[in-house]
Amino acid sequence: MNLMKKIRSVLAALVPLALVAPAMADIGGNVSARYIVNDIDKISRDQPAGDDAVNKTKMETFGFFSNTDYPGWFGGFYAAHEVNYRQGLENVGLNQFRNNIVESENKDQEIYFGKTYFADFGELSAELMLGNESSRDGLKYRPKISGRYEFANGFSLNGYGMILIQNYDGPSQSVAADREYLETEVQPGIGYKINEDMGAFANFRMRNRTQQRALYGALKESEQTFELGLWKNFGELQTSVRVRSGTFEMWDTLSTQTNVRNNTIRNDKIYRLVGSISMPLTNKLRALVDVGYLWEQYDVIRAGAVTELKAPILALGLRYEL
Figure: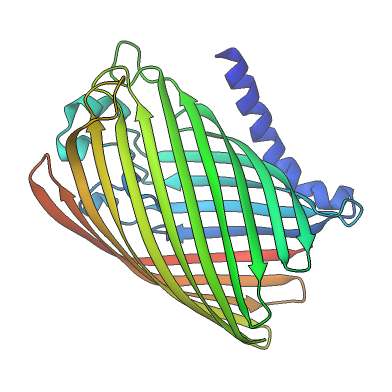
């Protein structure tokens, strides 16, 4: 455990160092900061059904760095502080998960590095992320592969695949003790450039999660979302609009030794409508604005309740180009 604490301390120190790295070397890229009300991409399992899921706020900073002296190599960081955060299932009457409730806030710190290989038809990238999340109090790491293939007629194929692994300790002598969290995510997509200032895209994302527990078997989740979007540039002003719909299902297994489905816990529907604007303030600084609306229908089967969450989405930020 002391080693884990030391690693997390190193991660916490590297994030602010990444902010000043451009001043120490000839590095390109960007650094951004955003304030978010009701996260656009918030994972449903972190949102309890009902009004207490509304008005979750997040302050995040993130950056991407590259250097022409090392073609294709890149690195970056992500740091976030979530307020009014609640991750757990106590609200649906599943008392065996009470020790998995995290109230008030969550702090997330990540650093990553990788390599991009360029070709005439597109590119292929591989990266590795190392991080820590305070709500689970455990080290996490994520290998990721992404790529893009461009056709001559304006169409392109793109996508990524990644695996997130996180080991963390729950309260001793509890069903949540000695847990392992595993998440796999794949997102294939297609794009079409209508002209140099306008294009359309479609993405299909699949997430699957498994949380091992000391008792009651494993907790399983599956999420599929489909997104359609359109982007348009008006000179230096960049705009986009996208609509997303999907499903989210949660169930548990009979024991830790089997994947046989035992009980379906939730069966939800997810909808998003978001518009984005990136506006130049100076030749290096841009303002970022996301405005939208979310609607999620929660069918909490084991509790015998169906509720809805409807809320506006707002994200305000700045991006500095190096």
